[in-house]
Length: 525
Ligand SMILES: O=P(O)(O)OC[C@H]1O[C@H](O)[C@H](O)[C@@H](O)[C@@H]1O
Image 1 (cartoon, rainbow, N blue to C red):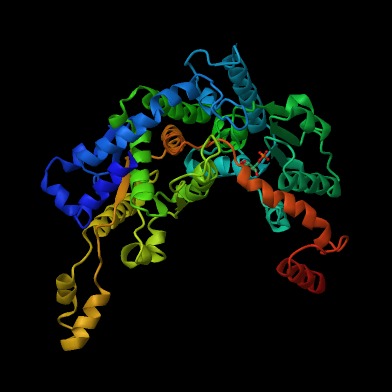
Image 2 (image 1 turned 120 degrees about the horizontal axis):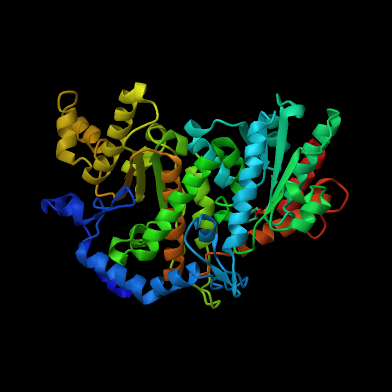
């Protein structure tokens, strides 16, 4: 099946994307309008035959059957023997979901009610500041969404501490009032070194200020015993099951800080958006299925054409943490080298994902996207309207820039056009030289996701869209998107290096570079 796609890649080599628009229906035929959002993938090299070939790849990989298995609670995380059911967390009125013969929905809805009661209590209390202490999946989701939904935040201020670098917690605590600050210790395992270190520092801070820790901590974890041992009473612990992966966990208790900020109704709207995308993903035919198409376009660019990175470029300033969030979601899920059965992957795993909001990126790294030697497929996203009606002209400029970038990437500028640009200023050889610098190769692919407004429901749709995209890509690659063994080795070595860096153990047995670096630290601290 991949051979077929490679043949298509050879067939279209050198073809200009712009030329595809000679067909007036190109834009509509290569776009999908679903769940209130428009996904336009017409500014790519995909044509009808390529799309069919990609859909065949998805069919042959069994994407539909695997999708149904995921939603039905089958243990598709095969290396850890776990179901993958973050979708159950937003299955507000979708009926039973069975794991090992038990319906998990009563527990999910009960936890949601407990979250709502706690969030309501905190919002009504004297708490002015909430500090979420967590890392990875216990940080990036709520931190990204808190920024994204700031126009809806009418509760206490939220802060996010993740890094073990003391600078993180020190900077957040500066200026906070211990009497009115609440700490959320968010950790699925409740063993993560960064989180436990920061949580202990928070406790010490309260005690240094002469304030009791009682009632000042909430725990979000699947390890209730550890949270209890740490001294957080059961009533302040919100649990979740092992079938919620860390990077998929913001829909449940890990989203508590977001719920405190935007209120239970806003949080339910976020869940509803996710649920709406789930319904679309389950019901739509593959060629009209947004997560499937997003995944297939990505795989065409990465696995078939060999473009190793993908830029995510939201023209939505409040999505400034989206790229970081997606880096974990996509790269921790699909950055794998072996298939589910342990064989080496015969093709590349998921791409490097990176990005920044527009228009800022335009004044920084877009130079390379337009004229660098590598092709970087871009994913633009933009809202039709902003939350600042009085600043509508800003929003119009924002949209104009977003559309201009995808047009510029596709069209480029020929040498003749470049010559015309500089003809009045230079002549002869200098004109030729100057013109060359102003040529844009163009033919660079991009997609655009456009939606009415970045409200909680829409954010829910976007995040669920990307989650399912990762799932589809993982099924086609034949990998397990739901484990993350690749993060373990560094953690193990860090624990052995801790005593070496503090000078309590010797660096004997370490390589010369590590020894040299330790030596420098010991001499310079
Ligand atoms: O929520 P925790 O158990 O503290 O884990 C936090 C994070 O750390 C781990 O190293 C994993 O790579 C992440 O997937 C996880 O989200």
